[in-house]
Image 1 (cartoon, rainbow, N blue to C red):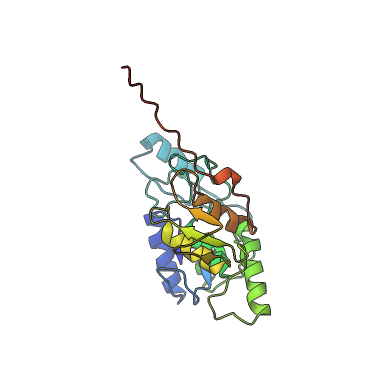
Image 2: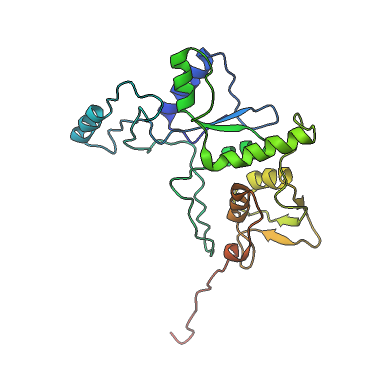
Length: 250
């Protein structure tokens, strides 16, 4: 499954995978083995965002000789055409204003894949494999901050002999969660909660309510808990909407 890429990068990755006889899926499921994340060092020469002088300068600085392993071959000029946005959960009207750090990119598909035990690799792995005309070892191409997630999931699935099931590692420990109809990324968080040990309640008492209304917990709490491989406190993710004060004397 490909994620977090510009259109140009996606086209090149698709072409490379097909030449290596790989199969591409549109969504993550139990048959998925790898998630390929767009490389932030990928070159996109966009005339919309860059002047001719800047583009020429970038073309000259992109030259790298015989150093395909330790240094990125590609340098980023812009990402204006990215068609799969990174998760930067800036919830509207909420206290949970923490941004996903630029040096730790993640998308919904990377999290869905990681909790299933899929390897999450940068697209450079595909390009370097094509250069070698074979699938090379993944070491050195892994998305490091997601590695512990899929390694833990793979270990647990192997120990429980559930490698071909919908099992993922337990994060939410059976807590009862109600997801409101207007919750952000509702489908994605439903999948993550189901895979990671939560009980989704469609009525009745619940331990936590996910939504956008005042006092509810924003969806970012789920993404951050999964990314951290542990249940995070909800205190920083409570929606606090400040109502406008209306002066009736005016």
